[in-house]
Image (cartoon, rainbow, N blue to C red):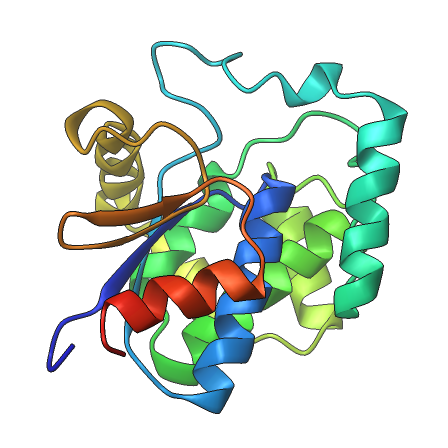
Length: 193
């Protein structure tokens, strides 16, 4: 993969994105490689109810909780629908380990701590409680260009023909939806990573 990076399309309010992120990070700790993160929102802008998470049954959330438990992460049913727009704005100003910590931190704040990440105050407060540097996020929230980027990235649902989150992409190859460690390993083998 010399010089190229995988692209990970995701949303902070998607439990499958959280699972995919954690599995991807485990693989990256074993075998470092570049990943470009693109937060595209939970649903296409033209169809905000597409994935219907607000209608998911308690049984589905219990299964997600059990899958997370096996991986050593907590996935609780969020208390109410939440927008990830505030959290997505921070992506462009974090780098390196700070970016990795930020992404993991936002997922934990939402799914483990059941915090509504729609508001900057709650998100910043809970990230700080989890030891995450929030200065890049605060700077991003002051910069109108970060909002513009989040809005442009949401259009990738149509322009990049993303059908679900998470999606892992390299060139014309894609791995989409719920995937496990074996699926990630096989996907990376086909890319000669």
